[in-house]
Amino acid sequence: MTTHAVAAMHTAFTQGSSFLLTTHEHPDGDAIGSCLGLAHYLKGLGKRVSLYCVDPVPETYQFLPGATWFQTQVPEVAFDYCVVLDVGELGRAGAVSRWSPALGPYLNIDHHSDCAPFGLHNLIDPEACATAVLIHRLIRAAGHTFTAEVALCIYTAIVTDTGSFRHANTNPEAFAIASELLQCGVNTVAVTRQLFDDQPRQRLELLALVLPTLSFSDNGRIASLTVTQQMYAQTGATPEHAEGFVSHPRSVQGVEVAILFRELGPDLWKVGLRSHQRVDVAKVAKAFGGGGHKAAAGCTVAGSLVEVKSRVLSQLGLR
Ligand SMILES: [Mn+2]
View 1 (tube, helix red, strand yellow):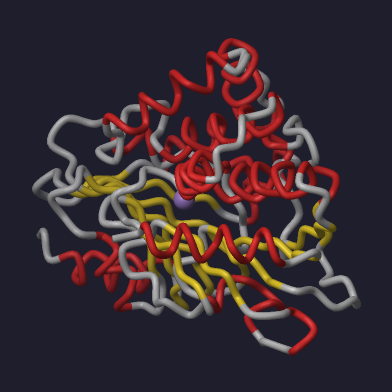
View 2: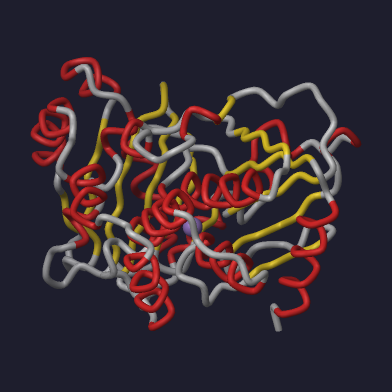
């Protein structure tokens, strides 16, 4: 089913000579890892590659080789193709979402189930645990080997998108590819240390302020945490330090949906939703103009915290 798309991508990668690679705003490990994995691969083929993301690379992923290649402005040169990675909805790709001839045709590589095929070629497979898996398939189908750089980027993407092989998207392919990448020399201990055991102190100090906001719905099926601007100011933390906090309410017995409310500004909240698969939180996020996956989604909602909480909770319909 994706064989045709793999062949079409391969042809584009072979024939094109310059590529702009881009991913979604607030990039995560899969966004950065799949971009950089593909960037190293294309550079290895002698191609000119530029990387753009509307937001800077989070500190956590700056250890990845090539992380400094990312620019937060689209370079003012012409490209043969614009490869859009891990972007379920084109609107999340910053300036690249407004197409211009200089970008070249879009090549869409993604694993979001609701991704629209907006590219000239579209390699979309919701069964892939990470977009980086599709990069792996492309390189393997081309018969090329995995360099240490490519292997590290793809491995990191898989680890982050599967929650260290714990989430429901963790499938045999995830382990098979991970195994193969380890044979290419990926140092799992070093990756783990970079991703989880090298956190800035402000992150834990922020968490210490956030945990007292823990609240449950009456039936205990929904749990949430709240992060305010005041908490960032008090600890010197930034929004990226709150990444992953939602796993705390999600880990509680009986909780089906965990929510992280993050204050973006006056009466504006970023709502992160996580479920244990039974509840489709992507649908809920979509109702507020957001999106994501069945078990992990997000949206932005305007209003006071009380209003936003009540609207999101009634949309969930678990009360
Ligand atoms: Mn992803």
